[in-house]
Length: 443
Image 1 (cartoon, rainbow, N blue to C red):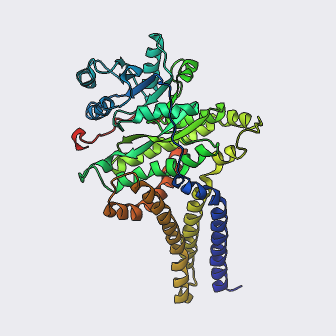
Image 2 (image 1 turned 90 degrees about the horizontal axis):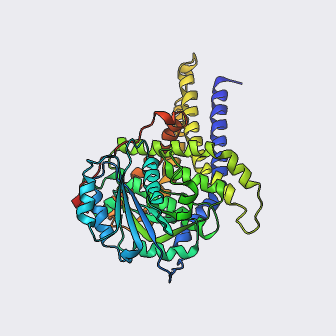
Image 3 (image 1 turned 120 degrees about the vertical axis):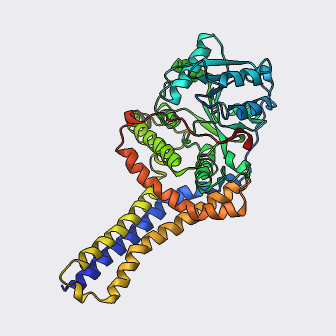
């Protein structure tokens, strides 16, 4: 076999392998693509004749810049004030949030301010706040966690009460991008808009279908509601990873908790506007993803062995593998590109370089860039679907939509790099960072 024949053979192996693996990824991802369109079906609206008692827990460590916005939305709630209480958790008695809470809520709404020093994670704040409630001998029907940077829709608690007729252990609320409520440039950029698409991906194009078909849901740390009996069982809050929401969600799979996605229970949450802040947050999420799956792996295997004919038999498969084809496709595309580049570099460094026909330059260019182009175009279509979903529930204008569609494929591909970093990171070295917040008066 001549040198040129060997070169052609190498590119053929890479090319056919790439095409075959991409076809496999697409085939495996088809069931997940069905999820994208479930939200278009009319969802059943529920009404609850019972008025439940709700505990609203707000972790507010160094959040004085934004907590006023949340408190305004709490004061605007249409739910009977006699049936909900607010617990705000700070880390020291000089935190300015204390005065803001007292001034704004005063005698209007029942509330407690709990000081939990030495908070190393959000779980510490939740544990301290919930233990305070238990020590006071109080009892509620439901607990709702809302971060201090949120803005609750005025009927959020009322709709949460309605969703409680489903009688599930956990209720996932509908998170939306707060930044899109403002027309200020410093609040809206490609980073915040790409980050905000996560809500559409997880909820409208994920949890909505899973909720209706008995699959395991993805939990988010704000807008997360659950029965108070879980607090009593845990004697507070036991999930202390930096990604406490993912840890709770993984534990829910192991423990068999039921969950419901409630699209009418709406809160808006702030999105980061800097690349550095976004990468740091995604690294935290993915470290939680990796560590949680490892932590509960044995418990989930044990739970999987228990056969229940009333449950969806594909729920564990969906939990384990729903994202695998997408990740595999990204990996395959990158491997094909770098393999082709490696063959090309080996060729130009060889003694046969003078025989290198211009045709092979074209072939090399094609093999290096086609996988990346196809990857980009595929993620572009994927993004367009998420943008379409997001625009139905937000103020995203056409310019923002176009910028997001063309930049989000790069944003998504970077998840692979963040995942690699997260896989080899030591969670003990990660700290609960204080996030830079946006101006309170902007929305």
